[in-house]
Amino acid sequence: MSFLGYLINGISLGSVYAIIALGYTMVYGIAKMLNFAHGDVIMVGAFVIYTAMASLGLSPILAVILAMILCTILGMTIEKVAYRPLRNAGSPLAVLITAIGVSYLLQNLALLIFGADTKSFSSVVGMEPVAVAGGQIMISGEAIVTILACVVIMIALTSFVKYTKAGRAMVAVSEDRGAAQLMGINVNGTIALTFAIGSALAAIAGALLCSAYPSLSPYVGSMPGIKAFVAAVFGGIGSIPGAMIGGILLGVIENLSKAYISSQLSDAIVFGVLIVVLLVKPTGILGKNVQEKV
Image 1 (tube, helix red, strand yellow):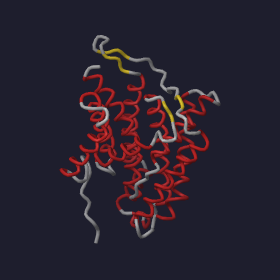
Image 2: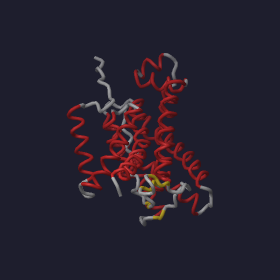
Image 3: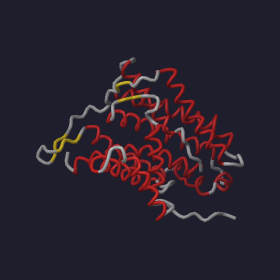
Image 4: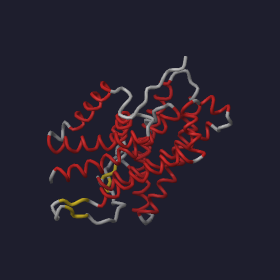
Protein backbone atom coordinates (compact mmCIF):
# COMPACT_ATOMS: atom_id res chain seq x y z
CA MET A 1 0.00 0.00 0.00
CA SER A 2 1.26 3.49 -0.84
CA PHE A 3 1.71 6.42 1.51
CA LEU A 4 -1.65 7.87 0.37
CA GLY A 5 -3.42 4.62 1.26
CA TYR A 6 -1.90 4.57 4.76
CA LEU A 7 -2.79 8.26 5.16
CA ILE A 8 -6.46 7.70 4.22
CA ASN A 9 -6.73 4.72 6.58
CA GLY A 10 -5.09 6.85 9.30
CA ILE A 11 -7.64 9.64 8.75
CA SER A 12 -10.44 7.03 8.93
CA LEU A 13 -9.12 5.60 12.23
CA GLY A 14 -8.55 9.14 13.50
CA SER A 15 -12.15 10.04 12.64
CA VAL A 16 -13.35 7.25 14.97
CA TYR A 17 -11.05 8.61 17.71
CA ALA A 18 -12.42 12.11 17.01
CA ILE A 19 -16.07 11.00 17.40
CA ILE A 20 -15.21 9.31 20.74
CA ALA A 21 -13.09 12.31 21.82
CA LEU A 22 -16.05 14.65 21.22
CA GLY A 23 -17.89 12.79 24.02
CA TYR A 24 -14.91 13.21 26.38
CA THR A 25 -14.35 16.86 25.53
CA MET A 26 -18.01 17.88 25.89
CA VAL A 27 -18.40 16.17 29.27
CA TYR A 28 -15.13 17.64 30.54
CA GLY A 29 -15.89 21.11 29.15
CA ILE A 30 -19.32 21.27 30.79
CA ALA A 31 -19.22 18.96 33.84
CA LYS A 32 -15.44 19.34 34.51
CA MET A 33 -15.05 15.59 34.97
CA LEU A 34 -13.37 12.77 33.03
CA ASN A 35 -15.84 10.05 32.12
CA PHE A 36 -13.52 7.03 31.91
CA ALA A 37 -16.55 4.76 31.38
CA HIS A 38 -17.01 6.35 27.93
CA GLY A 39 -14.98 3.65 26.19
CA ASP A 40 -17.26 0.97 27.62
CA VAL A 41 -20.37 2.75 26.34
CA ILE A 42 -18.80 2.20 22.86
CA MET A 43 -18.60 -1.51 23.67
CA VAL A 44 -22.24 -1.59 24.83
CA GLY A 45 -23.32 0.17 21.60
CA ALA A 46 -21.38 -2.34 19.47
CA PHE A 47 -22.94 -5.31 21.34
CA VAL A 48 -26.45 -3.84 20.91
CA ILE A 49 -25.85 -3.56 17.13
CA TYR A 50 -24.39 -7.09 17.00
CA THR A 51 -27.38 -8.55 18.88
CA ALA A 52 -29.95 -6.52 16.92
CA MET A 53 -28.53 -7.67 13.57
CA ALA A 54 -27.65 -11.29 14.46
CA SER A 55 -30.55 -12.23 16.76
CA LEU A 56 -33.37 -9.80 15.92
CA GLY A 57 -32.65 -9.56 12.19
CA LEU A 58 -32.80 -5.76 12.11
CA SER A 59 -31.27 -3.77 9.25
CA PRO A 60 -27.92 -2.03 9.99
CA ILE A 61 -29.52 1.45 10.10
CA LEU A 62 -32.24 0.35 12.57
CA ALA A 63 -29.62 -1.47 14.67
CA VAL A 64 -27.47 1.70 14.88
CA ILE A 65 -30.52 3.83 15.80
CA LEU A 66 -31.49 1.31 18.51
CA ALA A 67 -27.90 1.37 19.85
CA MET A 68 -27.93 5.19 19.93
CA ILE A 69 -31.21 5.23 21.89
CA LEU A 70 -30.06 2.59 24.42
CA CYS A 71 -26.60 4.20 24.85
CA THR A 72 -28.26 7.61 25.38
CA ILE A 73 -30.43 6.10 28.15
CA LEU A 74 -27.36 4.33 29.60
CA GLY A 75 -25.28 7.55 29.58
CA MET A 76 -28.02 9.58 31.29
CA THR A 77 -28.55 6.79 33.87
CA ILE A 78 -24.81 6.63 34.67
CA GLU A 79 -24.73 10.42 35.08
CA LYS A 80 -27.79 10.47 37.37
CA VAL A 81 -26.93 7.44 39.52
CA ALA A 82 -23.12 7.51 39.71
CA TYR A 83 -21.88 11.04 38.96
CA ARG A 84 -24.57 13.54 40.01
CA PRO A 85 -24.46 12.66 43.75
CA LEU A 86 -20.67 13.29 43.69
CA ARG A 87 -20.76 16.55 41.73
CA ASN A 88 -20.24 18.68 44.81
CA ALA A 89 -17.80 16.25 46.46
CA GLY A 90 -14.73 17.96 47.84
CA SER A 91 -12.27 15.82 45.87
CA PRO A 92 -12.36 15.27 42.08
CA LEU A 93 -10.79 11.87 42.81
CA ALA A 94 -14.18 10.61 44.04
CA VAL A 95 -15.73 11.09 40.58
CA LEU A 96 -12.65 9.67 38.82
CA ILE A 97 -12.66 6.49 40.93
CA THR A 98 -16.44 6.12 40.40
CA ALA A 99 -15.93 6.45 36.61
CA ILE A 100 -13.31 3.66 36.68
CA GLY A 101 -15.73 1.56 38.79
CA VAL A 102 -18.56 2.08 36.26
CA SER A 103 -16.13 1.08 33.47
CA TYR A 104 -15.28 -2.24 35.18
CA LEU A 105 -18.97 -2.84 35.97
CA LEU A 106 -19.96 -2.50 32.29
CA GLN A 107 -17.04 -4.70 31.16
CA ASN A 108 -17.91 -7.47 33.63
CA LEU A 109 -21.63 -7.33 32.83
CA ALA A 110 -20.73 -7.76 29.15
CA LEU A 111 -18.49 -10.72 30.09
CA LEU A 112 -21.37 -12.35 32.01
CA ILE A 113 -23.93 -11.80 29.25
CA PHE A 114 -21.88 -12.36 26.08
CA GLY A 115 -18.86 -14.33 27.33
CA ALA A 116 -15.17 -13.66 26.73
CA ASP A 117 -15.06 -15.08 23.19
CA THR A 118 -14.37 -12.62 20.39
CA LYS A 119 -17.41 -12.24 18.13
CA SER A 120 -17.28 -11.59 14.39
CA PHE A 121 -18.98 -8.24 13.71
CA SER A 122 -20.88 -7.69 10.44
CA SER A 123 -20.18 -4.28 8.92
CA VAL A 124 -23.02 -1.76 9.09
CA VAL A 125 -21.63 -0.05 5.97
CA GLY A 126 -22.96 -1.48 2.72
CA MET A 127 -20.83 0.73 0.47
CA GLU A 128 -18.44 -0.84 -2.03
CA PRO A 129 -14.71 0.13 -2.02
CA VAL A 130 -13.78 3.04 -4.30
CA ALA A 131 -10.71 2.86 -6.55
CA VAL A 132 -8.57 6.01 -6.89
CA ALA A 133 -5.26 6.85 -8.58
CA GLY A 134 -6.06 4.66 -11.56
CA GLY A 135 -7.08 1.69 -9.42
CA GLN A 136 -3.80 1.63 -7.49
CA ILE A 137 -5.47 2.58 -4.19
CA MET A 138 -8.72 1.08 -2.92
CA ILE A 139 -10.55 3.11 -0.30
CA SER A 140 -12.96 0.98 1.73
CA GLY A 141 -16.58 2.01 2.11
CA GLU A 142 -16.05 1.99 5.91
CA ALA A 143 -13.23 4.58 5.59
CA ILE A 144 -15.34 6.91 3.41
CA VAL A 145 -18.44 6.68 5.65
CA THR A 146 -16.35 7.14 8.84
CA ILE A 147 -14.62 10.30 7.55
CA LEU A 148 -17.91 11.79 6.28
CA ALA A 149 -19.69 10.92 9.55
CA CYS A 150 -16.94 12.64 11.57
CA VAL A 151 -17.16 15.85 9.49
CA VAL A 152 -20.99 15.92 9.64
CA ILE A 153 -21.03 15.28 13.42
CA MET A 154 -18.41 18.00 14.05
CA ILE A 155 -20.34 20.59 11.98
CA ALA A 156 -23.67 19.59 13.59
CA LEU A 157 -22.27 19.78 17.14
CA THR A 158 -20.56 23.13 16.55
CA SER A 159 -23.81 24.54 15.09
CA PHE A 160 -25.84 23.08 17.98
CA VAL A 161 -23.58 24.70 20.60
CA LYS A 162 -23.50 28.07 18.79
CA TYR A 163 -27.08 28.49 17.61
CA THR A 164 -29.49 26.61 19.90
CA LYS A 165 -30.82 27.53 23.32
CA ALA A 166 -29.62 24.23 24.82
CA GLY A 167 -26.18 24.77 23.24
CA ARG A 168 -25.88 28.27 24.71
CA ALA A 169 -26.91 26.82 28.08
CA MET A 170 -24.02 24.33 27.76
CA VAL A 171 -21.59 27.19 27.13
CA ALA A 172 -22.97 29.10 30.14
CA VAL A 173 -22.66 26.04 32.43
CA SER A 174 -19.08 25.41 31.26
CA GLU A 175 -18.12 29.07 31.91
CA ASP A 176 -19.68 29.39 35.38
CA ARG A 177 -22.06 26.78 36.78
CA GLY A 178 -23.19 28.92 39.73
CA ALA A 179 -23.95 32.00 37.60
CA ALA A 180 -25.79 29.84 35.04
CA GLN A 181 -28.00 28.45 37.82
CA LEU A 182 -28.76 31.95 39.06
CA MET A 183 -29.81 32.94 35.53
CA GLY A 184 -32.42 30.14 35.56
CA ILE A 185 -30.55 27.52 33.53
CA ASN A 186 -31.29 23.91 34.52
CA VAL A 187 -27.71 22.81 35.25
CA ASN A 188 -28.61 19.15 35.95
CA GLY A 189 -30.63 18.93 32.73
CA THR A 190 -27.84 20.54 30.70
CA ILE A 191 -25.21 18.12 32.04
CA ALA A 192 -27.57 15.16 31.45
CA LEU A 193 -28.05 16.34 27.83
CA THR A 194 -24.26 16.47 27.41
CA PHE A 195 -23.95 12.86 28.59
CA ALA A 196 -26.82 11.88 26.27
CA ILE A 197 -25.09 13.40 23.22
CA GLY A 198 -21.71 11.90 24.16
CA SER A 199 -23.24 8.42 24.64
CA ALA A 200 -25.15 8.56 21.32
CA LEU A 201 -21.85 9.47 19.61
CA ALA A 202 -20.19 6.54 21.40
CA ALA A 203 -22.77 4.18 19.81
CA ILE A 204 -21.96 5.59 16.34
CA ALA A 205 -18.22 5.25 17.07
CA GLY A 206 -18.75 1.62 18.16
CA ALA A 207 -20.56 0.84 14.90
CA LEU A 208 -17.84 2.44 12.75
CA LEU A 209 -14.93 1.00 14.76
CA CYS A 210 -16.23 -2.58 14.66
CA SER A 211 -17.16 -2.25 10.98
CA ALA A 212 -13.58 -1.27 10.12
CA TYR A 213 -12.02 -3.82 12.52
CA PRO A 214 -14.67 -6.59 12.59
CA SER A 215 -14.11 -8.23 15.95
CA LEU A 216 -16.08 -7.65 19.12
CA SER A 217 -15.27 -8.44 22.76
CA PRO A 218 -16.11 -6.88 26.15
CA TYR A 219 -12.76 -5.03 26.00
CA VAL A 220 -13.22 -3.57 22.52
CA GLY A 221 -13.77 -0.03 23.82
CA SER A 222 -10.90 0.13 26.34
CA MET A 223 -7.93 1.07 24.14
CA PRO A 224 -9.88 3.27 21.68
CA GLY A 225 -11.36 5.02 24.75
CA ILE A 226 -7.90 5.77 26.16
CA LYS A 227 -6.60 6.91 22.76
CA ALA A 228 -9.64 9.14 22.25
CA PHE A 229 -8.97 10.71 25.65
CA VAL A 230 -5.38 11.31 24.48
CA ALA A 231 -6.81 12.84 21.27
CA ALA A 232 -9.05 15.16 23.32
CA VAL A 233 -6.06 16.31 25.42
CA PHE A 234 -3.91 16.55 22.28
CA GLY A 235 -6.40 18.86 20.53
CA GLY A 236 -7.26 20.82 23.68
CA ILE A 237 -9.83 19.27 26.02
CA GLY A 238 -13.06 21.27 26.07
CA SER A 239 -12.67 22.31 22.39
CA ILE A 240 -14.93 20.61 19.80
CA PRO A 241 -12.71 21.40 16.77
CA GLY A 242 -9.70 20.46 18.95
CA ALA A 243 -11.15 16.98 19.54
CA MET A 244 -11.51 16.45 15.80
CA ILE A 245 -8.00 17.70 14.98
CA GLY A 246 -6.49 15.69 17.85
CA GLY A 247 -8.33 12.51 16.82
CA ILE A 248 -7.34 12.70 13.15
CA LEU A 249 -3.71 13.55 13.95
CA LEU A 250 -3.56 10.65 16.40
CA GLY A 251 -5.00 8.20 13.84
CA VAL A 252 -2.57 9.36 11.13
CA ILE A 253 0.47 9.16 13.46
CA GLU A 254 -0.58 5.68 14.65
CA ASN A 255 -1.16 4.31 11.14
CA LEU A 256 2.02 5.78 9.64
CA SER A 257 4.02 4.52 12.65
CA LYS A 258 2.65 1.00 12.08
CA ALA A 259 3.47 1.18 8.37
CA TYR A 260 6.94 2.75 8.41
CA ILE A 261 8.42 2.24 11.89
CA SER A 262 6.99 -0.68 13.90
CA SER A 263 3.53 -2.03 14.60
CA GLN A 264 4.68 -2.92 18.15
CA LEU A 265 5.94 0.61 18.82
CA SER A 266 3.03 2.55 17.29
CA ASP A 267 1.22 3.06 20.62
CA ALA A 268 4.45 4.18 22.32
CA ILE A 269 5.06 6.68 19.49
CA VAL A 270 1.51 8.06 19.82
CA PHE A 271 1.89 8.64 23.59
CA GLY A 272 5.42 10.01 23.05
CA VAL A 273 4.07 12.61 20.60
CA LEU A 274 1.41 13.56 23.18
CA ILE A 275 4.10 14.16 25.82
CA VAL A 276 6.09 16.37 23.42
CA VAL A 277 2.97 18.39 22.46
CA LEU A 278 2.00 18.92 26.11
CA LEU A 279 5.56 19.99 27.01
CA VAL A 280 5.44 22.61 24.23
CA LYS A 281 1.75 23.60 24.67
CA PRO A 282 0.27 22.27 27.94
CA THR A 283 -3.32 23.18 27.00
CA GLY A 284 -3.21 21.19 23.72
CA ILE A 285 -3.38 22.48 20.15
CA LEU A 286 -6.60 24.53 20.46
CA GLY A 287 -6.85 24.66 24.27
CA LYS A 288 -7.13 27.98 26.09
CA ASN A 289 -5.32 29.10 29.20
CA VAL A 290 -7.91 29.48 31.96
CA GLN A 291 -7.30 31.89 34.82
CA GLU A 292 -8.16 30.36 38.18
CA LYS A 293 -10.79 32.31 40.14
CA VAL A 294 -9.56 33.23 43.59
